Image (tube, rainbow, N blue to C red; front, side):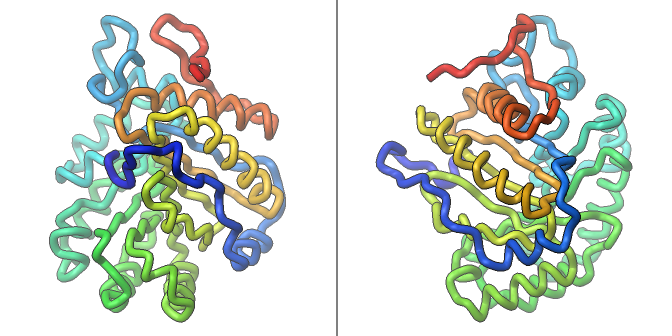
Length: 298
């Protein structure tokens, strides 16, 4: 992921900002339990992106990937319209506890900018419904220049989005977050329709760390900078997640990207080990092609 890439990540202040005060209000209405539904994975499963991850002779990448991870951020649906038949084929290659998180097609989000997209949206939802129990949550990413002047379009879209398909939203224009009146209206909208507010954590766009949850689910798109600071950044997220779990977090969806996809499985394995150690969970830790534990390099 090139979004938010910087040439000198060592110059970035990676300290996470404080939570938005209303995040506690969203979480505090839930029963506090450490039995959180946790999904950690990558954005792609192909060999070209996940280099040195697959054992030699692997014939079906998704089948193997699903033995190592419990989810995938499915960016493929952003670029192509996959019908229900293809989606069922993907579903059938994965175990019962695996989850797909398909991205809303770019023709809806970027080309038509949510205008006159009712038929396309219905088609997308009909298709991803074929994941059945393997469907985690669809997510809508909007262009950087999609700002609050488009509030009516956003309202119309989320209010008519099929209720049977869980939805998360990634906004990349910080005018949504910097104006208290605008952000208040946005968060009210997302809470009303139970839309999960995605947090984007990347080096060059620290302004997107709004730290405002609108459902008891944390959906985090985390982008490593191919730098030793990547591991310290993951440790910082562990500290924040401890707070959220104590406050009532129910679901964690954490997807690991890199500006250059070299070590996403390694970073994911590091993070999963830390989650297990911190919370006493027993999440599967991805292995090397030789069947060994993926280890920290720095």
